[in-house]
Length: 618
Image (tube, rainbow, N blue to C red):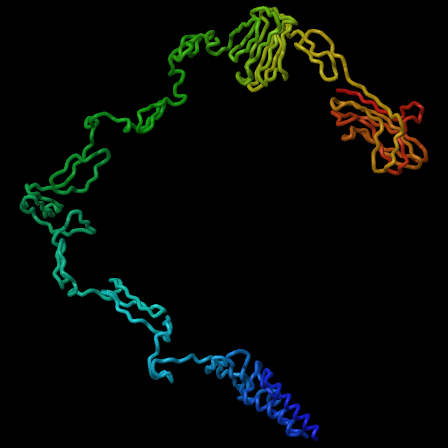
């Protein structure tokens, strides 16, 4: 028994010793109803913790669940120590409602209403309620468009009225305008006016005292017809409507009466000429005799026909094609109109011979030149030698585009002394061409050429006289020929290369992916060549072998052969044409079946079993 009491006392002491370290006082206040249990155990284990929980309002950072069924009971309190101030809450059977906040640092209490803290109330007299004392301005809310609030006092300046209150409670003033007023001003409120229109103070009746100069009138003036009034005083004029003719009149201080005119329209080509005292206008048609001075160019009408002019202008123009042959001056028989004077002048009647001369149409003319170079002019028509040559001479044609298309020039050896040594060379100008070349040559006495221009860059030359006997003046031996340029006699000899070559040893075809070169020739890269050749191929077993004739770039000819039995050889012949070879012309072969193929050079004992030859043909 003593041991049991010692254990209970020890347990209670440990519980009391460690209780200050507890994070909450939320022990269950539901005590056990079954025993046996001694009093010490009951008190320390159940009663004292329950009393502490009840006494401390079940404080803790989480809601207490220490009632029956481990749940709070209605109206149970809880000191929520999650933060400071501590919120004092009351359980309403469904949730915890805040009653107030206890600040354990400032030692203050703040009550709550409707879930929020009640703001502090301060007055200058009694703070127990809002029925006494004065509310300070700082506690007044600012007004808004929909809520009341405090405003400042304001005294507006003269003729100004309050017209606004800002959301800060500050009133604003402004002066009203007539547009801000309702109703109308009363006659009694009107001041007196003076000037052209007068009025007494407090009256709406006004009087027109004077119509000033340049006063506009928006409508009409209604006048009563009267007889002519008496002559007005000096410096005055009476304006009235006469009762007889019922038109507006005026009478000046001299007694002179003037009147307005009656609207009238004259007939065509008539103008107003008279105005009666009754204001009636009279019309008549003026004649040329009534006009002074002369018609100015600006008044001149437009002329049409053979001679035209624009309206308002005296400058005339003879219309195109208006002057017919019949309207021209008569001409002398067999003449043409021309100016043969060599300077600006009126045309005259000139004869056909004069018109064909170099000073006019330049149809017929001769230009002689001797033993020296000469540049033929575009105005030259026939150019000839007039002295013997001591050496070959060169005459230069004018540019083809300096003369009319189809224009012709004759160049001839009129002197008859040109020889095969002392030739007359007629060359182009610039980049022009003569029969597709650069020149042509007269190399025999009395020779001549007729040159025709295309008007752009080309001349054609047709041989005449002694130069036409052979049909051409010279022959140039072309590619592959020797002999140069033949002007009188000579021969062009064929000079075309022929090359040949043969293998000097067998060539192994030991890679099925590659072609291996056989016989070849180094013919160069110019000219056109005919190539032909034969290679003899061999394999130790059945095989297919491809061969081609080519220059390393372009294949001229190709073929294939089949080896049907072991160590059987087969010839392959190839030939063809190629212009401007890229490299040596050769025959290359490829064994696509085995690596044991060969190109043979001396199967027959003649060392020509794989050979190639090429012939230049151009």
